[in-house]
Length: 192
Image (cartoon, rainbow, N blue to C red; front, top):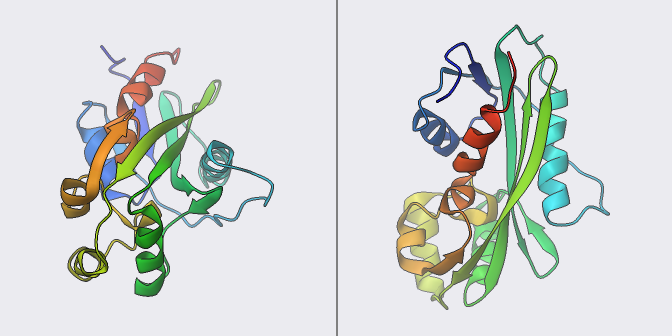
């Protein structure tokens, strides 16, 4: 069981991360702040997600109190040696989903957990295979679900995941945006 004194600060705007954190029954507070999500060009795949998770932690504007743990995370989609973050508009979302159809891609989530005296950072990878869906299918999804806040322009937990994702190898929750089982495991390692 988790230390009852632990107070988690989830620094994320993602409603999916909020939902996943609620599910592990920890005392959590949501705090958001703006962070520049640029990264060095030479970084690849999981390195990008780790870099951004740590960058978000380093940008946290407040001092951590005793028993507080800051959680920051970043999820990216990686295909054909290219990163897919959140789409800027419908056109970019359409291009991303065209790239994913009929192919395998990886989803990487970098996680940083930090207290005043400890830090754990890790990256989780899940492989996802998509069916070869039609342009009409893609247009319907973008119009109805507006996936502009999602890496790779899709949610595994919504219509796209139900209809277009053929299989995954790895953590389902990682594809949602947070490998919650591993987060729980690391939270239990903090000493207070």
